[in-house]
View 1 (cartoon, rainbow, N blue to C red):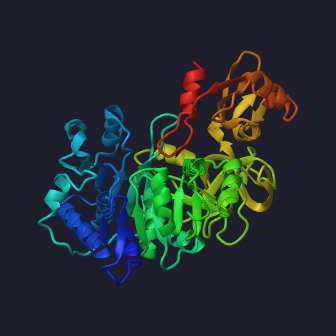
View 2 (cartoon, one colour):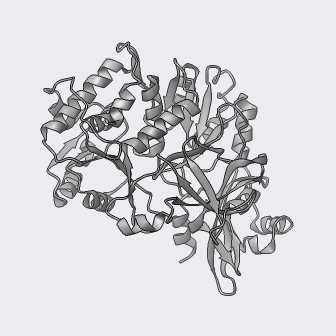
View 3 (cartoon, rainbow, N blue to C red):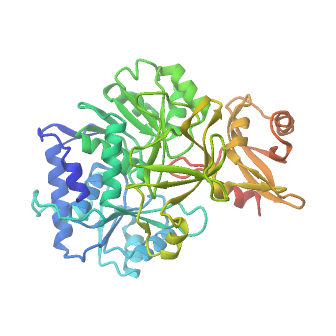
Length: 507
């Protein structure tokens, strides 16, 4: 089934109702959404492209950008969202690798993006601005505002998402209509979407979190979205009293807590706060609950899998845990010898289910490497069932992510998991956040190093911190070096870029 047809089945019967309200007061009805989507889909169909053609999109967030995504699905083509921060060299790789039939870019970038596209044989390049400008909309005007949705099978590709590429070249994760559709249906039920829900949408839409998890949820539920172009704390606080659901990265919640105007009255109509895409500090989890009375729901997913686990909507939500495996999704934690881990034993997280991607675009060998012989996808994350976190005792059926396997530090033959050390450092007075990496060491092979950010108005002493840690954790886990910095490098989704830290401190 075409994913668009699934999403469309949730649209309300009253087409005059508001589908999207923008931060600057524009209203798009469901009739507007369907009409614009059909016009763009009919434009794409008029190009007479081969089945499976890719539509690469690098534009700023706007309702029209969402309609373009829906139009690509409706036309039976494959959507390829690209981070708006990518520059020419990065775009050359993505466009060269994916060979899209269509590229859509911001008007301001047309001159250089069109050259990149031409070099890769792309024949159709359109522009789309966040102010309803651009050649895409101009070309779509004469086309009909109605049209049939192209039939696609469950296994046909709906989208390709390129991973962040922290180790080597980025890989294109191929997601089918069934992969994305099954996840949308599961989350609608698991997070108890209700009639009348309003989604406060401030996430980017070139990423799985904002494009699939958030947008799919609202569309499938026929819910209005309040559409913000980016994270703006004042705008979040302004629109939150008219919203019921917000999805964000941890930075959203940290920034809200720093604003004194964010109060219980702000959240009076909210039903659910969801956090993902990066680890949520237990301090933030606890402070948010104390300030608002609401417990943030943390979940876990990947570009290759969409959502995998989630703390429950009804039931205990635990800081430091990403919750239970979602219905129809299987999760296991495996030791290096291939045996299943017991409670509180650390191992590699592997997953299986209808939401798991089909493989990496044009990388059959890499795809083969990332799946076990019995069909489980190796997430690259390290985790455990149950145990203890600073948020309390974790039930045995709840998953805790310890870190990435590529982040594992082997010091003197001992395994060190950065997140464990980070949790101790983050609990120290005056510490805002930390990132732990391995650095070369002549005796131990690798040694532990911590890069730490102090809270505003606080000063930290690295030697005192190291001495403090020696009384709490095994000596091989204690950082040999702590560096105090003003901020940690992050990507667009708020994830700390440890590869940049390694480049800075390991060379």
